[in-house]
Structures are given as C-alpha cells and as structure tokens.
Image (cartoon, rainbow, N blue to C red; front, side, top):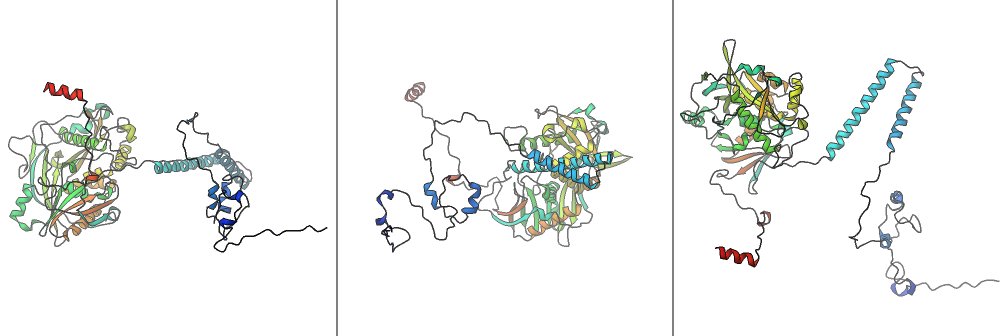
Length: 557
C-alpha cells in the first residue's frame, strides 16, 4: 500500500537569501539567526562544545566570517563581591627535563655506537665535560637574552628643553661617525697661562691597606669658562684676526670626538660669526662627570636617591676636583708658565691648573684654536713632565659587580676592564683631553666611598699612571677617528648661515640633531614662550576652610 507524500509549502524569497520575515513559523520568531555566505567552508553541521576544540579553529574557521558568535554567552555584569580564595599561581608542568635528558642520552648512545662501544677513558671524560660547559654557556646566553628583553626600558630626559619653534637642520647618526678617519698634523702652541704645583710621588705607593682619606679643598677656585667668555681668545682675535677660524675648549672637543660612546644627552651651542665658528657650552651642567653611563644595566633617574644619575655626577665631579689637589706637594714649589691665570684675581687661591692655547690646521681654509688644561707637573730624571689628573669613583660594589678593595691590588687589570665597560665615554674623553693638551702622562686615581650609603666621605685606594697614546690604544680610541668626527661636524657647521645653533645628543637614541635657535637664546634676558594650557601643570587644589575656622582667623586678625 503506497503512502501518500504531501509536498509542504515552500516560501520564495525574491529579495534575498533564506526565508522572508512573513514565512517564519511562530515558534521560531525569537530564535537568533546566524548569517552565512555560500562561500563558507562548513566543517561540521552542529558544534555542541563551542570553543572546546580551539586547536581545530585554524582548520575549520580559516574563512569563517564570525556569524556564529550570536550564540555566544557574554556576562555583562561583574560581581564585585567575588574574590579568589587561592591566590597562588598554578604549578607549571615539568615536561622539559625528561625530554631533553632522553635526547642527550640517545645522542651519547649513538656516539658510543660510532666509537664501537669502546670507552676512551680520560679523553671521554674531557669531552663530556666540554659538552656540559657548552650547554651551560648556551643556557646562560638564552637566560641573559630573555632577561634583557623583558627588562624595563629606562627613558632619560634631554639636557635642554627643545622648543617647538626650533627647526631641525641636520640629523647625524652616531653609528656612521665610527668609520670616519682624518689625519691632522702636529699642533702649534700660541701661548701658555697659569701655574702648576708638583706631584707628590708618595701617592704612587698608596694601596687599599694604606688608603688615605680624601681631603676637601673648598677654598680653592676651579674655573670652567666657556669659549666666547675666554679673555685670551678675545685678545688673540683682536691681535690677529686670522689666528683661527674654529674656536673651542678641550672639554667641548672631547665631547664631540667621543660622541659615538655617549649615552646621556648633552648639548653644545654653535655660533657662526662671519667665517668664524665658536663652540660654547650652554651651562655648568656640561662640566659634570658621568658615572656608569655605558653600563649594561643603566642607572634610573631617581631624584631622592644618592645613587641617581644627577647625584652620582655631582659626587664624581666633587671627587675629581679634590683628588687633583690632594696629590700635590705641600711645600709651595710651583711651575709658572708664560702668563698668569687669566681667570683669577689677585690674592685669590686658585686650583693648580695651566692652560695651553694651541692651534691645528684642519685644511687650507680651516684652523682650529683650542684652550687645553693641564693639572700638575712631575720631576722625572731631572726633567719636568706635564700631567693630567682624574679620578674614578666606586659608589656601590653590589651594583658595579667588582669590589675594589679586594681586587684592585692583585687584579688591577680586571678593575680597569670593568671601568672601561661601565664608563667608556668618560675615560675616552679624559684620554682625548690629555692628547689635545700634549700631556706626557695621565694619572688615574681610584677613590671609593667609606661606606656604600655615605656619599660624602671617601678614601683614595690607589693611583696609576699611563701615557696618553698607549692608553688610547688600550681603550680602542682611534686618534684619526677622533679628528674625522670633529672635521665632519666642523664642515657641516661651516656651511650654515650666520646665527646661533644648538647641537643636541638625543637622550635615548644614538643621534645628534642640529637646531636653529634664536639669537638671544640661553642668555640672561632670554624669555621662553609659555607652554600651552593643556601641557601646563595644574595649580594645587585650594582647601576650603570651614566657617568656624574663618571666623576664628578673622578674630585673630
């Protein structure tokens, strides 16, 4: 007996795909509709588990338009009263050790088969130990890589506030300066000024066991005069206009010559007057010494800490000045140069320092004139040699990684290598200044805190002397590269129009930018434009006094 088959009524939708709104059964009116496309790849007819099989998402949902998300559950209201009882992190599965252990055992078994199953005795032990050392070294490299990658980045501030109206004329990447080279002839002395005191040779025998406390010389004046304020340079220009075309000090030149090693921000004012070029420092912060500048783990800028960047710079400058005066003889014997100190007045106690005004011929049209400093003089075999004196300082051996009191006597090379890594720019600048001044020897002192938490009292641990050219070779400071960097900067600045400019080292990138600044910038009467209102700091909130307090204050008045 045949069963009758009734064909149901099929609604035809002429305006789109799927049933129209009028043909939807009443029991399906409130069921959400998941839109789809004819080109969708359907992996399964029904998914009862939702997101359970996430590893198959790429296989089935590669071209999915996301229409099935209408069936997902979203919890919109957060329960503030919910608290997790167990705050401990879940245990990590120990799945790596056995796998690598099995791999190493399989490799050792295969190598034993290659050797015919024979044990080579001591040779096999040495080979095994060598492989273990290599494995530990690789693990250490990976750990160091991930620690450095996850370490928080410290952002330093610029040495000068860059104004929005300053135009950037040039950007010099410091990485490109390391390949420059230029050869300059011997300098010519124009004049010499100042008086030097003789070096006390008893400091050559100072050791950590016979350390000496660092003395303070608060009554002695140290002058750090910029180029355009130097009366000798002004006089030389008046006497002979063609004495030079570029003028600077040894500190400014050393900063430019060693700029590829610098990490902190610095700035130099450039003034173009006719065909003359003057390099000046902007303020006294330029003369502060840096500490731990090129270390792998930089020092954060914490204002209230004695180990912050600014606090350590002030401490290092204080140590360097006092140390340069402490190592001198106290008998009053002095070595006088041609002219007196140009910055000191009569009856004024001045630090032992002399100035050599020298000139170098950079090319046929460019002559450099610079003021260079010397700090002391020493008698060696009946003749006098000129010295520069500087001091390295230790602030906390737990941060630097090397305890000077324990290793400086027997492992002085390791201590110096650590300083070359952490203070490469400072040591290079000292060496460049010694080369510019023509010093016969540079003295480096090692000064440490009495206690790591006391930044006021220090002791002299030892002292070492080096010849500038030999020390430059030890620290990989190429003299021709120094002059190549300076020649490049001078050539860029000589092409500028007359006016005032500013060279600024970016605080967080190896880049030096040349800005065009107003003619009255950085002078006493220079008025900076106020910041926009949205960038200004809000005023402190005013606390409203209660009425009783106001009445009491009125009665007291």
